[in-house]
Image 1 (spheres, rainbow, N blue to C red):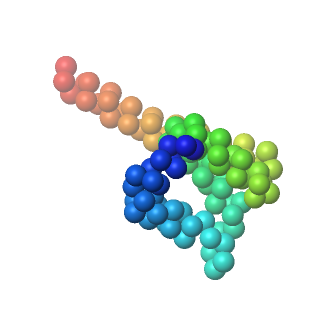
Image 2: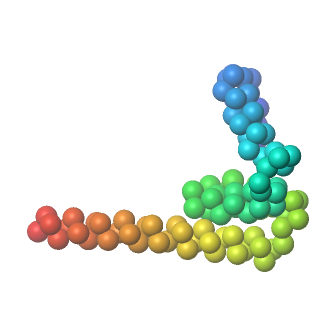
Length: 102
């Protein structure tokens, strides 16, 4: 997290704007989703985006928001399902291109 502090010093406007966006999205007052649900989504998206740091943080935040291990694992499996399906569809396009180039 030291690098984030450094960015805050060297690029305060950008980091401030990003922080404001995070706070607006993560707020619970008037939001349709509670913090636990948002963190479970964040866990799944962290997996789908291959962000090891994000996975660690959002698993921690999900637990803090009251998520169970079972809920976190289920969110992880949804990420596997969604990450695997689109990847398979793109692999199909590769096969089509290879056939077309023969």
